[in-house]
Image (cartoon, rainbow, N blue to C red; front, side, top):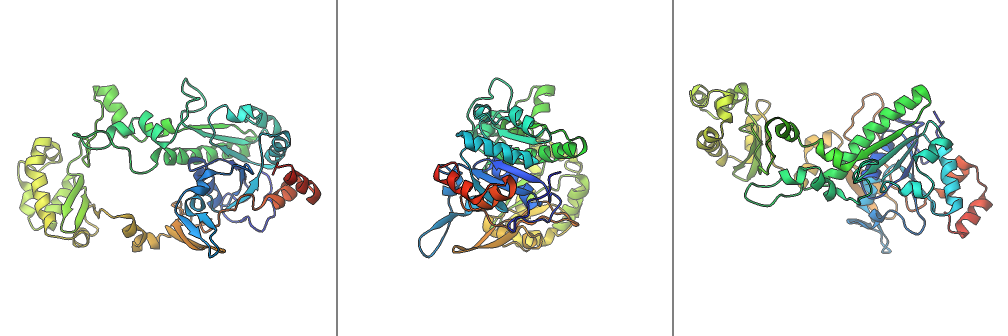
Length: 413
């Protein structure tokens, strides 16, 4: 494996210390993938075009300095712990420099439309010749193969094409997109898994490979039982609102100051629930005494839902959570303010803060991968455009200050 470059900005800690990642991605799916690798200790170099950097830098909300400058908190969250380098990949000198960087790298992550890097002369086939052990991770809407490979895509494209959009919402209303960029985020997770698997193979054999992750594929894999329900029974999944397709009770219920999720559907949990709400005899009611009976839609609507609504209505979310304790799965439906200030979230270090010079303090989500021997380091800054260009070109490529200055004058960096 390539030795880590000795830069003061790059953390040598973490399980991926020594792994060098070239990040030529934009917006979320690619940057989030490389951010996870950076949190885990990899030296991640974010490469942006000098005149056209990652446009997520213009996404709100913004940290603002006293003199009116601003820095995107959105960008900062997905690009923390990275080193910034500017490079114009459309010009010959820029292509040459990327190849020189690829010689020293272990991983390259890109999220362009398939064929874009090939047109630049920097696709997987070319870079494999430069560095046979390079792991080349490509994230796209529809993948590197197949009839849709060249179609442009955003997160909503994946939600639509992967089937998830058609399943979400309420039966009497049009389908509703999932309320976050689940297509991007799902592709991120699979890209990280694929990259680490390919990196493990490269460490053993010296052989790199292409990691091909599509948003459509990723979303499809999140549709739970929809595929087998269709292939086995011919059932097409439809919007169900807050209900599950067959598990009951397992949804949202109103209470005194909002809503809670309750999922006590097994026989053991149902018996505990009846006792918890002071009516233990209901666990032996012959109409609702088994899970199979409670799954029946007619029985559920006539007996179970009214019962749960009655139990919940006079209590607050906090009272219900306290009552349920460690017995049954009952959770308050929390807004993001509740979550950020949740003591358990804080105990898990899932809200981290960093101090941005000139801009002040930023709180953002932490790293959900918790390792006890080599913990992740999510408290890191995102780079300004090209912030570490000189240091990186000197340290990794061996360029002189005069050569770097000439590249800057010509617009290559």
